[in-house]
Length: 178
Image 1 (tube, rainbow, N blue to C red):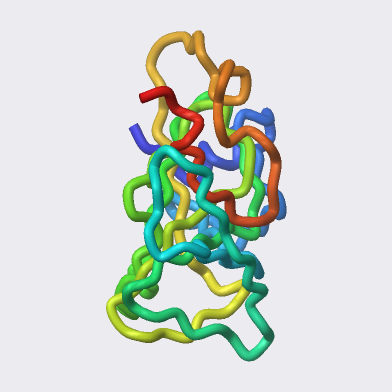
Image 2 (cartoon, rainbow, N blue to C red):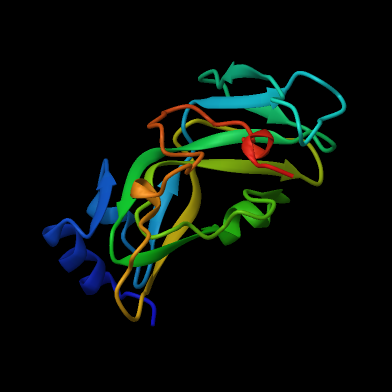
């Protein structure tokens, strides 16, 4: 079951959902619009290694915008810090963003119950597009969880993305044992 706007407001009031900053005008019928933060990152190396810590280079989006190009993976971040304690958050791109040929996540559209952070975005595009800090980039949709939760993400031992950050976070795959 997807939470309606009224249920999202109720969850905000109880602290089951946190959105900071929260703007009522960003609340849709059953979603909340999130915005692109001012930080982007790209990987420094042409070839990435899943067993190594791949370094990133930070980009600050200037006021006049930044042109993203096909063939490059950009890590972005939402302006909004979120917490979700009793629902599963899903991040989807806005249709207006998709119609510009921008995809905001390669695979990681679902968050975990207990996720407490800004969202790192995996941005790619099909042709060059100028993007801007603060532009609407996606929408959060919340699904109810049935049953008790034993293993909240923010309390999970070894969770790789628990450190609060206002900047994009690179892949931590190298921390896995394989």
